[in-house]
Amino acid sequence: MSDLKNDRFLKALMRQPVDRTPVWMMRQAGRYLPEYRAVRSQAGDFMSLCKNTELACEVTLQPLERYEMDAAILFSDILTIPDAMGLGLYFETGEGPKFRKPVRTAADIEGLQVINTASDLAYVTDAVSMIRRELNGRVPLIGFSGSPWTLATYMIEGQSSRDFARAKTMLYTQPELMHQLLDKLALSVIDYLNAQIRAGAQAVQIFDTWGGALSHAAYAEFSLAYMQKIVAGLIRHYDGRDVPVILFTKGGGQWLEAMADTGCQALGLDWSTDIAAAKRRVGDRVALQGNMDPAVLRADAATIEHQVDAILAGFGGGPGHVFNLGHGITPDIDPDNVKVFIDAVHKFSKKY
Ligand code: CP3
Image (cartoon, rainbow, N blue to C red; front, side):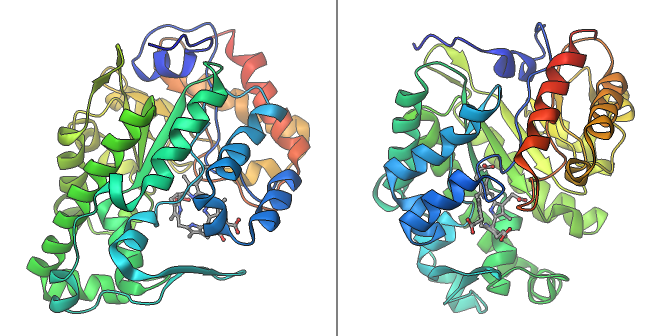
């Protein structure tokens, strides 16, 4: 078992007391950092960066060199799974992800194989092992995957989408086909996250970025049910520690009770939910992670500090808060403003 010098993040996820609120940021290794842009151009493109173990490790650690964050997150992407399934992922500059072979028909879905991480995605677990070694117990490492529904939207649309026209058409006209796809994805995610845990990930987060685009009933049937299946299939205790699971459904504020029922340890909140209300609803069952609007980071220092303090005050006293943004940091943010943000969490959280 490794010695963790800073276990605030893991403790808070398990709703144990900590000296101050731990903080990390979704997309903390990314384009707002000039040193990230330098390494990405050295790698050539984004996927080459993900597949280069040493460079993926290097960019994972970059934000920790600048800021006092309480966790590192594996540098990779959620779309590695569909890429490993043979869909041919590529990124066109400024346009986001694309697939050469999207899945559209019953034959496409029947032809998909559940991934085997050890043989298909060894570059991901290699990166996890190397990052753990390099971190040397400084802070815990978070592994992650997309939710089956979120992955399915990219696989069916073939790219990012505003309305998910093709994915929702399949959901409403061929629901059994959609379930077949989601089943294969859930089994793949279980294998993928368990492999990350065995390689050294000390907590895992499931990114359900597009769950909030579903109707109330469709969310339960096509997104939450599969996340529940994943939570039930994950290794929950490894290397002498609990391995907490964080579920993040963007736009999922109305479903917090149902999300907590999956047996996860923590819920990621986007900024549209009032954290005080969320705590009243589920705070005795799960930890809460979030939830400052990333747009606040475009404001002046006093505004950033005020917004941080308001969220800390909203959560109030007691265990179970991990500070984060409500979604990923955007590339236009000034790195100095991130320092103001992280330092403000440290400074103000001691009083709660
Ligand atoms: O948080 C971290 O620092 C870890 C790394 C991470 C990335 N993607 C790196 C990345 C994580 C956790 C993700 C998850 C991810 N990827 C999600 C779910 C999280 C979310 O934001 O809701 C989604 C939907 C994707 C798919 C994806 N990957 C998109 C839509 C894009 C384009 C985004 C954009 O802003 O252009 C990516 C590319 C991507 N993934 C980048 C990074 C740093 C930017 C790529 C680059 O360097 O050009």
